Structure formats: C-alpha cells, structure tokens
Image (cartoon, rainbow, N blue to C red; front, top):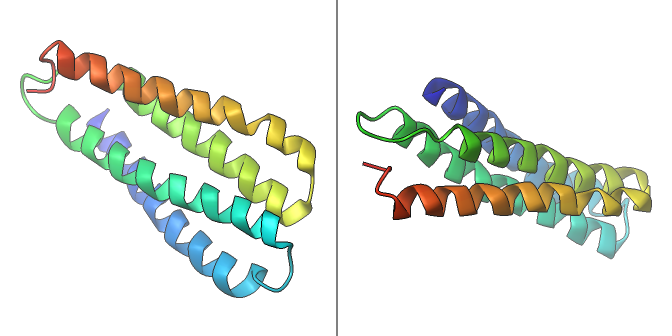
Length: 125
C-alpha cells in the first residue's frame, strides 16, 4: 500500500497547488468572499493532508512499521469528501454540501487518531 499512499499524496499535492492558483486567479472575482474562504480552507486542508499521507506512504514502506492502512484510507477519504464538498460548494453555491463536509473532517480526525495510536504502540519504527 505504501506506493498507493505516495501516489495519492502526490496527486493531492498537485491538486492543492492547482486549486490554490485557480482560487486566487479564476475564482477571486467570480464568487463571494465567504465561498472563496471555503474554497481556500479546502485547499489548505488538502495540502496539509497530502503531506501527511506522503509521510504515511514513506513510513508504510519501512521495515518494522505496523499496518497504516486505516490511516491512509481515512486521510484519502477525508481529503476527497472535505475538500471536494468545499470546492464544489464554492463553485456551485450549493450550500447544502456544507452538511457533507464534516463527514470528511471526521475521517481526517480518525486518521490522525489512528496514526497517534500506531505511534503510542511503537508501530512506526
């Protein structure tokens, strides 16, 4: 799975940079300040978790490291739902998507807790 986490992390990092540029240049004058802030929040969380997933990928490839599959999947699902819902809401003004965003946030939180538990158990090498 290490290779998959590295691939997903790289794609997420790419998308966060593209999203940041898109928000700053293409959306800045087309959407409200609140929606632009939502778009920016999604972009920031995507980059932070791309880096976190990159670390998970590196760790997962090391000898003696426990299974980080739960962490990787939680970060992946969380990034897609959290950032995806915020980006879509900002670009379409479908505000009901804001109700979905916490599902992604919860997945990210579970991922961090699973990573902390792996660290506490000495499973990170």
